[in-house]
Length: 146
Ligand code: RB5
Image (cartoon, rainbow, N blue to C red; front, top):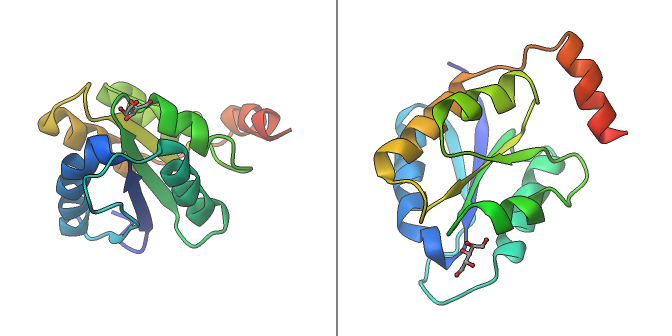
């Protein structure tokens, strides 16, 4: 386990409770967590939170990010606008592992209105436990950046 990794967490209002469950879960796994909110349930705008989390990863302040909104889609689209971010929205553990192994994703997006708590934690584990394989995949990932 890569216990030195620092993970940024953020969400919109639709996913505050699930984000807090995930935060406790990954802290218990030995990761350092930067939970940048929000903490109050008022309606808010997912692009603000997706881009704030993405900026932490893009700057190198955090190694990886996990972001959530109702579907996981809007916040994922917002994060992917930040240079250097590769964020995938997943609802199955296979995809959550493969976006690390093949796509070198540095952020995972989850839909709190799509998956329940148990599946969400499976996604988080699959994503965090996987490593980028490099090799032929590195060529393709570089092409995304280009
Ligand atoms: C908020 O109601 C909802 O639109 C948002 O959480 C997300 O699902 C957008 O992609």
